[in-house]
Amino acid sequence: MPTSPMPIDHTAIRAEFPLFEAHSSGRPLVFLDSAASTQQPSRVIDAVAEYQRHQHANIHRAVYQLSQGATRRYEEARATVARFINAAEPAECLFTSGTTGSINLVAAAWGRANLQPGDEIILSTLEHHSNIVPWQLAAEASGARIKVIPINDAGELDLAAYRRLLSPRTRLVAVNHVSNALGTINPVREIIAEAHAAGALALIDGAQWVAHGRTDVQALDADFYAFSGHKLYGPTGIGVLYGKRALLEAMPPYQGGGDMIERVSFTGTTYAGLPSRFEAGTPNISGVIGLGAAIDWLSERDFEQVSVYEQALLAYATERLAPIPGVEIKGRAARKSGVISFVVTDPPLASLDVGTQLDLRGISIRTGHHCCQPLMERLGVSSTARASLALYNSRDDVDRLADALAEILQQAGLRAAARAGRLQVDQADLAPRSQVFGSNSSAAPADGMNLNEVAGVEPAYPAAAADSPQAAADAIAEDFALLPDWPTRHDYLIELGERLPPMPPSLKTEANLVRGCQSTVYLAARRKPGSEAVIEFLADSDAAIVRGLIALLQRICSGQSAASILAFDVDGFFDRIGLDANLSLSRRNGLEAMVQRLKALARET
Ligand code: PMP
Image 1: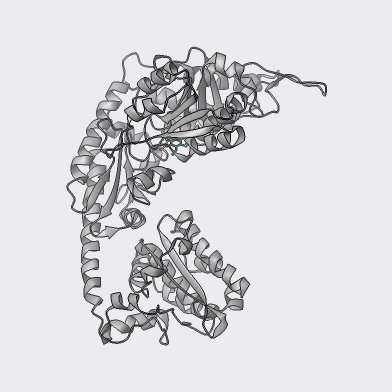
Image 2 (image 1 turned 180 degrees about the horizontal axis):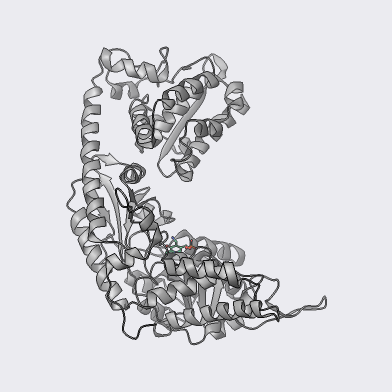
């Protein structure tokens, strides 16, 4: 390792990541989703490959040299982790599957031994689901209660409220070091000190911190500290739980199995000491090797410089995105990490559409609730678009994002204006609608009628677009065969979505809300009055791309017999028209949920 830290040379750093090399021709990839998972430098990939090729054997168990070499590398990586976070000793650093695995370990093992009815656990509004749900499970099992630290409108924890929540009943405070959804850097040293003063322990979810600033668990006086390898330029499926020795030693084992025992007999088993006691079974050896290599790689840099570089980039990104009309940045904490969450309000554009359209321009960002649904609820949104920064990002990436966003918004504005014009329906406007929904579609409003007014009268459920779902699907497949690539298919879907029959607000009820989608989807399905074996439905979404999918589904299923809907293979159809490859699983899940609802109704018929 060099004695003096390397300066942050963005171009040189980027050149170390094979992914960017692979996307360097044409328009280089702009990867702005490192808060979800960072890319890996060659050093990490090579270390894992070298291990797999030449050094692999199970660890801790055999006398032969190959196994001893693997064991040595595994334990060296533990020592590397301990130095990286300044743990008092390597045995306090347990390897887990990731932050989620680490928090579940504490919630289950420590929770089982320590939580009683009436005890309190303090979490915050900013938490990732993986620092909420394990505690809910522990609370359910023990009778403990969860209290939540609120935030202010900037996305900062309300520390005065935190102090009021602390009491002699508080057993543990679990908060993140950095919010993955907003980038807020929390004053964890202070939070830990206050927890200790109240006689409670503190667990810090460091998933979003460790790659961006120096971590010193002793200086923080953290009782537990959790993080993941894949947000630290390392592999997936590997993470760390740091715990103070005395606390870990007092905890019962989490999982039982090989390697975590001292002696097993049917009259009683005794357990191994740290760290083996909490690493039952064969661990993710190559993941550990990769994590060690990632930490070595990152440690060649000085965290002061990492921070200066990333903060300058964050300031630049904020400067470029904030003035774009219609963009509203969520999370304006005074201390922020390289995360910018935003929503598009004018014209209203679902995060899912923002993400999809940026992807069409070679820009990867994250959209959705970021596993922070309680936070989204507090912000009054169902999702945000989130750009997150790492050392391989540059001002060029930010410029590409800002320029693309401005262009997308401008186009969306033009579309919205065109749509508003189209609402004054004339005969010419009705033609494409009848093509989309079938010439006998009852969705087509009467001449001269404003679609907004249609919403006020009896909802117009679309009639069958073809003789059977299969016939409708065949016709759609023929149309799609003429569309050569994903961008043209995407545009076609948007067009279809724009011509969806309106769904009256009275049908947008909680009962008609479809869960499991990145966007908000409402679906109202019914048996056709007077023709009970026929199912018809109206649906709507805040995301244009999902409206396109709804249009396809409607054309296939609405107005068809229950039996034919049940017999139709929707998955196979989306595969057939080539959308499977481009629509993310979660988007498909929304579709899947709609299909499940339709089929459930069809089954009852
Ligand atoms: N906590 C935070 C703050 C996170 O950002 C994440 C990952 N998005 C997690 C926990 C969960 O990490 P993992 O999926 O690696 O277990």
